[in-house]
Structures are given as structure tokens and as C-alpha cells.
Image 1 (cartoon, each protein chain N blue to C red):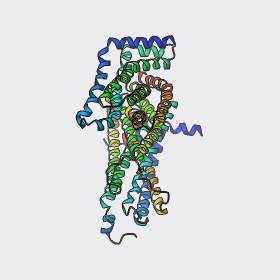
Image 2: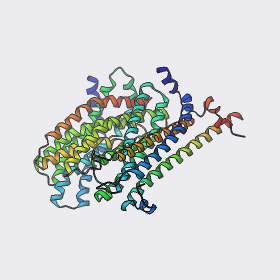
Image 3: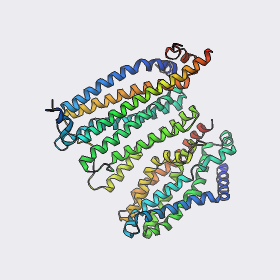
Image 4: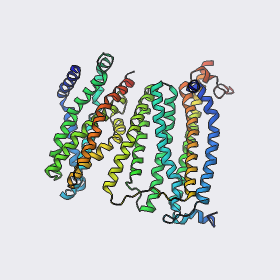
Length: 57
Length: 221
Length: 249
């Protein structure tokens, strides 16, 4: 392992802000994208279901 | 070929009747060119440095202003559909419309730019290169812009949408056009820039009518 | 072989295929990400010049690659769609765009965060960063156009055309930006690494790139399924799907 302690890891040789700013934004955007895709899918299914129900009645 | 010229003549006549639209784009160019010294300051040395870039960007934006009009009126009249369904080569007719558009919107910019260049204290040979670069560059802008206009026919938010679509594609023309003027300014010689502008002009004129026809067919179906 | 391709070109069959694929792709993406991060942060050495700050490349470079690969894929599906008039091609292009735009933005963001400690400025007009910015604009243009047109078929085909026109222009734009960059800067400021990069650094980048590729495939499969439901929701086969019909009323 490269890092002696956890605080060394977060400090990242002084570049902590930049490295974790990058990794953090990456993680954030990926999670947002996945979440948005899921919501869009749920909405599409809900819309299709209303058509289904209206056809049944 | 006859159809080509009669279409160009017709578009020129129509533009003449609607002078206000054409002239307002030109006045936009004049106003934008005046805004930069007002915003940045009137020192001659700095104006000479930013002049080519400012005038090129102004010409670019003024060109974009006139694009929504390119196909709009003929589309509303039904003439566009009529031309598309006729036996005449549609690509040639589209080229005719693009030519008329350039004559009305691009060529005046070429003529006006040296006059505005005087406001930026640019010497005569630089003004000459400014005109030449715009002469080669504005037709490319008309060609590329026409594709954007065709794709956004009748779409809401048309003008701004065209700008968003088309401005990234204009970047090469801007880089080499403004670059040519700056090269002239610094005494390095602009042959390379001019050759590249020509190299962009010929394919643009060749491929744009084809891409526009495809785009118009998509829009009209 | 031709028959197989067109078999999956129908939304109905692709829906099933994508449904089976995406969980696996997501799992692969997760595994590759962990492997890449392990190599990049756990194993790769400290850089002589850039210290620990260089580790941003483990997301910056893969994100840049993906933003370009995705745009090319969009152009590929667009050509396919305009040639064969398949509905699925338009959906693939639409599904790819947001992810591509996101990677382009990430490339710019991480590029800025890399540039600040290295070159002292949040933004440098480096040829690659500037080209990436224009690529980002091209993505935005595509997304604006396809969402502005109400008719789905026309939106797909207009988007396809602008994607193709954009793709053809990308090399021209890159060339002109490179020219512009070398003219206006004495020493070329470059964010690219020199050829002599440590093996482990390369491995880390490669693993992360593959991870992002797997992630993209997974999310695109998922998104296309959503688009299929949205567009084909009224058809019998969609109505018969367990997730649509199987609601306990």
C-alpha cells in the first residue's frame, strides 16, 4: 500500500482538493445519471400502465 | 441552370422588398463593432490588436441573424415543397437560395468591414486582408448556416437554436479567417491561411446543398 | 449474419436483449472501476514532477476518450438510422448523448482541476481542452435540437444529420484549434503525459477507461429500454410486459 495513514490518503500530497474534487464530481455525476435514468424508466412504466388500465375499462 | 438563376433573381427581388430585415443585420454588425471599444477602452494599440477578432466575430454573429429567414418564407408559402417535388434538381435550387442569401447578407459584410476596420486603426493592407478573408469565409458561413436553418425549419426557439448548432462548426473558419488578418498585421504573411480558407470554401459549397436537401426533406416529411 | 442483426433492430427484441445485458455490464463496470481505482490510487507510484496531483488523469483521460468514442458512436448510429430507416438507431443516438455530454463536462472539469495546481490557472486554452469544449457544445446542440422538435421521427432524423455533420467537422475543428494554439503560445502548454509513463499509470487509465465503457453500455441499454416503453407504450407487446400489466390492481 502506498499510503501510511488515512489522513495521508485524503491529503494526497497537498493535492487533496483537486484530486478529490475531480473524483467527487465524477462520482456525483455518475450517481445523478443513474438516478435520473431510473426515474425516467419508472415514469415511462407508469405512463404505459395508465394506458393499460384505460384499455381494460 | 435557368431555374438556378431565376431563383436567385427572385430571392434578390424579395430581399430588396424587405430591405429592413437585411439592413438590420448590417446595423447589428456596426453596433457590435462599436460595443467593444466602449467596453474595453479606446487605446489605439489595443484596438489594433483586437480589431480583426472583433470584426470577425461581429460578422459571424450578423450572419447567424439572417439564417432563420433563409427557408422560412418559402416554406410557409409552400414553394419549398413545390420545388422539392418538381423535376428540377433540388440541390441546385438550394444552392441558389444559399447564393442569394450570401449576396444579400454576406457580401455587404465584406464591404462594410474595412470601413469599421478604420475604427480600429487598422492599416490599409490589413483592411484588404480583412475583406479577402471575409470574402472567402462568409460563403462558408452561409453554407454551414443553411444546414442549421434547414434542420430547424419551423421549430420553436429557431434563431438561438441555429446559433447553438452552427457556432461550433464555424470555429475553423473563424480561426483561419481572423488568423489571416492577424498574420497580415504581424507581417508574417497570410498565404497559408488564405489557402486553408479556400480549401474550406470549395467542399462547403459542394456538400452543403446536398446536406441541406437532406435536412429539408427531413423537415418537410 | 445479416438476419441476426435485423432481428435485434426491432425494438421488441432489443428490449429483451438490453434487459438481460445491462445488469452484467453494470457489474463489469463496477468491478473494473474498483480494479482501476486500486491500481491508480493503491499501486501507482508518485509522479516525479506532479506529485500526487497527477492521479486526476485516472478520470480525466478516460472521460475524454469516452466523450469522443460516444460521439463517434452517435454518428455511427445516425448513419445507420438514416440509411436503413430503423427506429432503434435514433433511440441509441438519443440514449448516448447525455452520457457523452456528461463525460465531456467531466473532462473539462477534471482538466481545470488538474490545470490549476500544475499551470496556476483554472482554464488554459490548451488545444485539447479547447477542442473538448467545442465537442461539449456539439453535444448540447444535438440535445437541444432533438428535444426542440416535437415529432419524434423528425427529431431523430434531424438529430442524426447534425450528429453526422458534427462528426465530420470534429477533425477539422481539432486541426484548426491546434493551429490556433501553436500560433498563440510560445511554449506549448500540454496536459498530455509524455510517452514515458509508468506501467502502472497506464494500467490504471486503461482499467478506468474500460470501466467507463462498460458503464456507458449499461446505461445506454437501460435508457433505450426506457425510450422503447415511452415510444411503443401503446403496442400490444409492451402492454403484455409483466412490468406493465402485472400491477396488482
